[in-house]
Image (tube, rainbow, N blue to C red; front, side, top):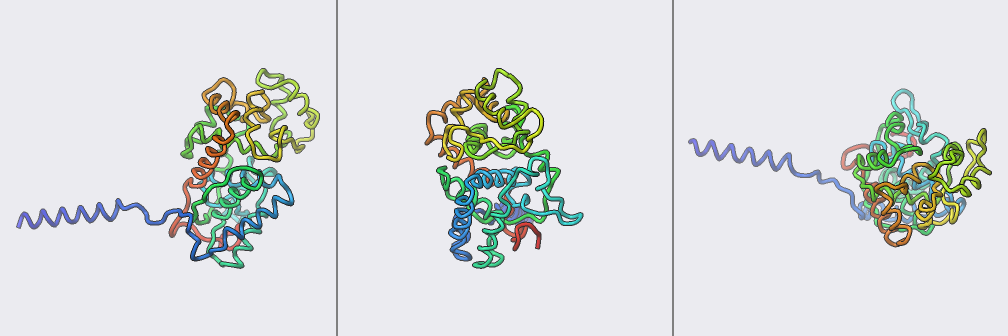
Length: 322
């Protein structure tokens, strides 16, 4: 009798172990839409190519949009949601996003085309992830295999957007910590910063740096930048993040840092006598290593806290919850 009771107890404990320790079956997969929407990726690519052909800067904007989405409650397309009464306070109006994050309409256009093919199947979060990959490839950057199966959030967080995204004035330690909190290493952080090989920044973001007369900025570079960014006014005036090859995804960004020609303070701190100097130096002379590390880091970033399985929803319109 006692042995039968012990056996039953062991069986029950084994049952609990199997039931509660089995990992969730839902997982991201590169073949996620192969059966349910086989032409989804081709359709997204066509929309992204059209947008970047119209305006090459859009490539940088789409990469940044994906980054700003993933660092706030995960890669769930929360950044795409518009204000909706008291329930949704849009991340679009958070300080790091307002007036600078762009490309919402491109993702919405891609979603609209995909909806015509497969209504209610492909998430906005996945479209944004694929768009970033396609944007990189179209301007000469690396490409990579994207795992799919993310679902869309039903919430947004303006508060998190204002506290979770790295500042343009961030110190190296702050940047390393911020990325580490999202499962990304210092090397990942430096590689992802290389996206600043393309795109532009507004004057108010780098004004303090170019007028500082600091030892961490090249004098000639500062002088050139002052021409388009006065001490007062012109806050929205744009300057390329990479003065040498502003429209090509390459490794000149890292060469610029070694010459004290980083436009933003958060760029230059990557090469300022700290722990990441050696990574910047490596990428400045080995473009293939930079591109492979960038691709790997983008994959890691795209898998930050995704909603999967029964979590979240599939939005029909990216800016609104069904």
